[in-house]
Length: 113
Image (cartoon, rainbow, N blue to C red):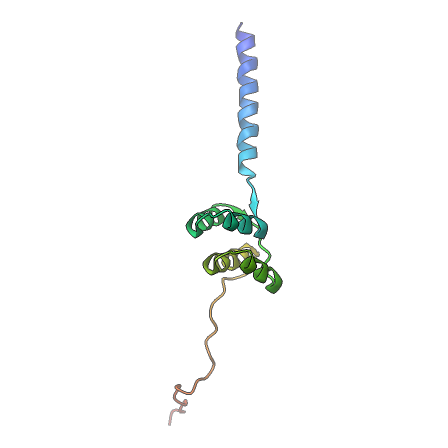
């Protein structure tokens, strides 16, 4: 009887381990998934939450961005997709707005006398 319980416990442990591993390999959100969620009427807040909690593989080429807009995806979600695509590239720092080297309002530099 004790041997039977040990077999059950071993099988249960194996099953739970496999289930845990499978759960960690969740879906990867793509452009198509975002378009589908948007067309289904999900709010931008729900789409945003899904993007932030999932692995992503976004195509952010100009053509793909046009497809997202034509697919009814809101601009704030497209912007989030761009951010996530940047953060997914290894060694790529987040985008920052470039500072102008010179503007008309910048006083000319003077050399110390």
